Length: 512
Image (cartoon, rainbow, N blue to C red; front, side, top):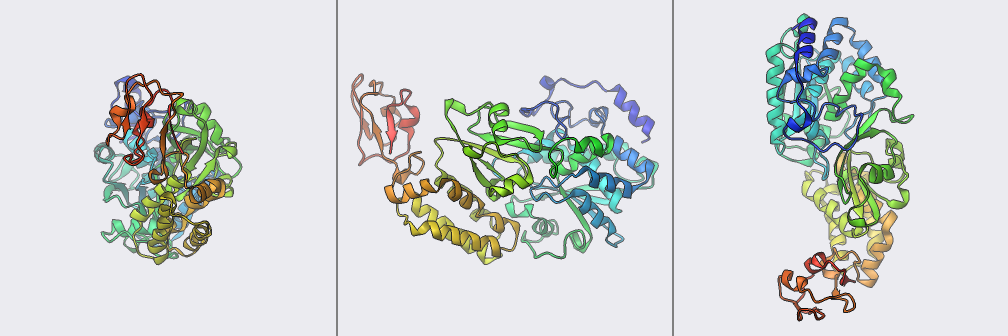
């Protein structure tokens, strides 16, 4: 493959319209950077990806033969890791390049496990060559000849798309031996994860790639010194790599014009939850939560009020509507008790119970803990037990202090980032919604009706028109009455499933 042949492919391909594409992703923003090619190319045809600029940055990098210059460009761009930690990407590349070693490895962390997150999946399924090209560039810069994409097996379409993309890239010579006649060799293979959330952490990922149990190790040594098979290893996530080709094409000067002083460029968010519109949104760093909810997400569904947003998934924090003008950048989110995370943004309306939501995230963390260290393995179970008692009406006011003290202990003493960040949802929801915890404990009430053992459903006579819809959906026949007359709920039979309230179109059923 030569530059001339690459250009000929670019000029000869007819692009399908988004309507002709399969596996279309809902993209809520225009003028995108990272996700610019999703829905515009067929990811199973490398010619279409080349027609939109793929592999030209790699060709230029090999032709100019200046790996240090590429690393300097990435450092000047201010690109930070999009996997959650926000570590400067150029600095990570530089440290790995400077590590002495005849054999090095480039790894793409595609183990996306946060509830509500689907950014990496969309990129891998819609534009896999942006990641493969960036990994090859990284390999050239750090003197590595092989790369590994660690992707979870629960993404079967992403896996099959990546396999086909690698196969086609090798066939035309943009991966494999003597790429662009430069003498540089670089191959990429896939490793499938078994769905362990903890394997998103670097040292756990390394253990899993090596065929071992996915458990974290203390650092140092860092992967840049001793990673996969004990070799110097560069690890970045999918979105981080997807930024690289355009930074090299357009220059770092264009990249730094977007974002904030310390958080440059754009960020892809996966909006889900109670917003009118859900999907992918790529926005400049520093875009506020309110802009995401109202301007991009279309507001809150069913005319309800915006209550809170969760960023960073089970490792992040809950942000109340009162802080809706908070910019979405690394420093601003940390300042209010949350983190950027990989980009999941869960929107919650006024009917959300924050105690139940904290319990939901903690259940996930307890289930996903590798069990290696005691603070995470035992501490999070104790947190979950306390929250469960509160949601069942068995809580005590002293539980609030116990939640806080135990959370801080877990954060300070856990071995890896999963344990260290697992109490974040509990602490942030206590910080902003402590009154709901007190209400559950003292008044034995869950106004949202999510905590079933605290909910008491009642039909309001002044609003009931006797349509019988609630009676028909009750699974235990706890609702009785006659058509066009007021219906009643027998509390001794009610199992508090909430189906009656969900079904009533007249707002005649309340819970307290």
